[in-house]
Length: 125
Image (cartoon, rainbow, N blue to C red; front, side, top):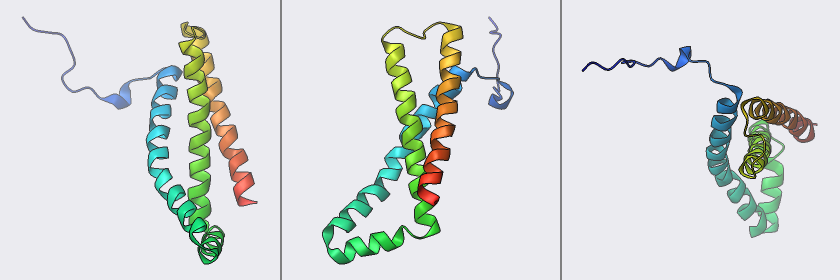
């Protein structure tokens, strides 16, 4: 019996719905947060070790790379929080229909972009 299924599935040709994109992005931001925490924990530990350590971390945050890492971390945290709240609301039985699920996913992604822009303004200016 020959099965009619794709042998080489090209993922770039598949159009995913907004719900799938939001869910995948939520997982990716979770992994990014895990790795970003190494920088956050190091900076926290260093700044609490001594007055010199605090001044070192304070001076480090005036640099471009540290500000970029901080902006990325805050942006990822914001979207992950928004996506997590969306998932909790869905766990309570709301937004489970196709139309409302797609709308909530689009709103969550849009709020994530707005949060990233606001975080950028807060960190960079």
